[in-house]
Amino acid sequence: MSENNTEKPWGGRFTAPTDAFVEHFTESVSYDQRLAHHDIKGSIAHVTMLAKTQVIAENDAQDIIAGLQQIDKEIIDGKFVWSTALEDVHMNIETALVKRIGDVGKKLHTGRSRNDQVATDIRLYLRDEIDDICLKINDVLKALVALAEQHTETIMPGFTHLQSAQPVTFGHHLLAWAEMLLRDRSRLQDCRKRMNLLPLGSAALAGTSYPIDREFVAEQLGFDGVTQNSLDSVSDRDFVIEFSASASLIMMHLSRFSEELVIWMSQASGFIDIGDAWCTGSSIMPQKKNPDIPELVRGKTGRVYGDLMALLTLMKGQPLAYNRDNQEDKEALFDAIDTVKACLLAYSGLIPSIHVNFEAMYKAAADGYATATDLADYLVVSGLAFRDAHEAVGQIVHYAIKEKKPLAALTLPELQQFSDAIKEDVFTVLELEGSVSSRNHVGGTAPEQVKQALKRLASLI
Ligand code: ARG
Image (cartoon, rainbow, N blue to C red; front, side):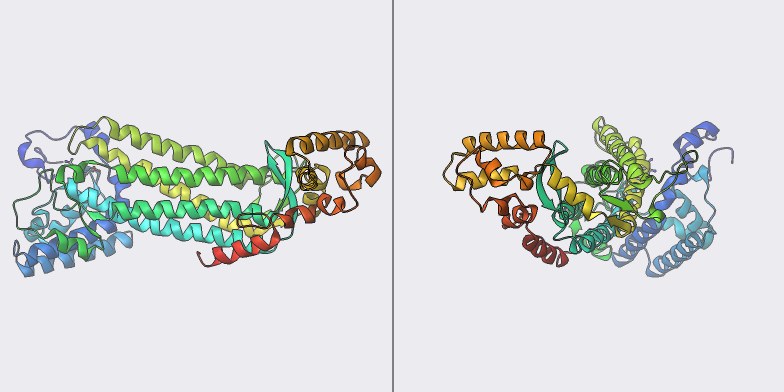
């Protein structure tokens, strides 16, 4: 390190070298180097604009662009040497550029600041990550649809309070998760749309006196337009928070789904088996095959909620405009991105490995008096008030439990003890198949509706 920090782009004002602890405490390059490619992309657009507006000479811009492209390649090839003394990704790349092409490289930072630079980099980077996450959501949706297609007629108990409630088709149940993921995807797209404006040109906080062309840079970088207030542009990270909130909702949905998979695979339920390749064993109990992937997804949900909380808290105390607090946005954001991507990947791999034990599902639905509501509805059609029908069926269920019989196994005289409105045709509503196929409206569980829902989904993924 030189005596007076002259190797640091901001060193001029300083007379003493930075304390080693401070260097370590303030650096971000160990993690923000992840933004390198997008940083270079932003710099190339910026320098192209500087030449177009004649702030710098065209041949200087060409030299800078060529230098940046070489650095980009060096980074991709893993040959670039990062320096903590140079603080962050921006100063590392700028210093490397000057080293490579000489003093002309110093012209790159004309009319911009690291404050609008980093705000631009994160948007460029996050935009790409959102696109990737949407593709990964699509892969999970495809896996859910493929499994649901095989189970439009498979009957299982639907639950409320985790108690057997009414029979549903397994396909219908799976597509409930698909609906949630579709909303998750659209939330990400909304968030992408709102963040897709260029902050560059805001400079440190007040804008710049150079005759810049922000619209030109925006167009080059695929932004829908430019941000409207320089103070806001360099300081707010609401778009990072919004993304993390959307990521938290994805995780919440995946965590609920995980919980079901864990329950379904338990010996007590036995509804599914997850393929060996997607389970792990126990080091002490030789018989064990555990659903560790869903459990880990459920567990990792807490990390992403934590990231969201960290980001909300990071932002809440900051006066305008940029404060160094904002450097702390990156690790939380990166963690949320990495976690969501890994969990989506886990599910697009795991779902196709699921073996469905439809006999266990059917038996659980039959044993759970799941057609009791159908019987009450049958009595209502014969003229009873719903509350009276509810009371009569409650007594029938009580009787059936005592007799240890499913509802469909009761005889007509047994049923008629509770209501003389019950006739021979009652058995069609007591059968599970009749119950599910009668719920034949948009959003209902009937196999016919599940087939319609599958068609709709196929057109959306
Ligand atoms: N590493 C910084 C960040 O992540 C870049 C901006 C630094 N700006 C400054 N004036 N110190 O926010």
